[in-house]
Image 1 (cartoon, rainbow, N blue to C red):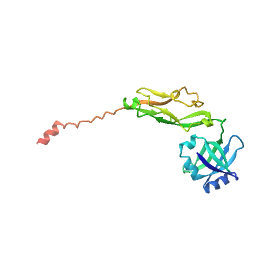
Image 2: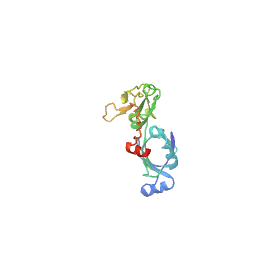
Image 3: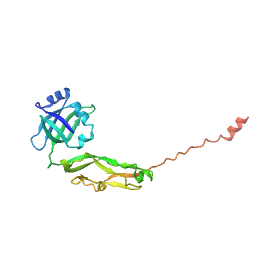
Image 4: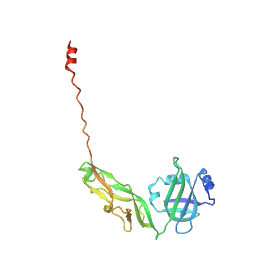
Length: 207
């Protein structure tokens, strides 16, 4: 994905506030050289942030006519307004090793024995993982195949197939669960019968 950035000359809180009023977003790009303050068009950035690939891909930034490869590192949003307040990017090249969170895309769930024949549900325990790899190997997402799951089974981190050079970081957790099969619990609805009228009341009614 490509985006355009512009060099930001003025610094400080007041300058950043004026930028936001004019429809711009202040930011910074760092790594592999001197940090550079930048500004971006707010609406273009806001819509780009809605795309999954913008968060988990190597991006091409056009700055002053020069193209640089970067990854998104941080986004500061307004507490309750749909406004981007600040954005950070990191320059990368073929030798840069990075840690980045990428989403999981689950496939073949409906075709699994657990769902199709065992009539169970598959619960996705986690939706993304942190990986370590060279920037040029960064995957936009990781595919998780649920087609082999059956009743009573779970899929773990070690079961995920990764490209060469890509490693999942678990922060000390040993082979965490990614997805697990859960049986469907059927609720039994009991309809209570209406109480029979008392004998005394029934006799009065006949009179």
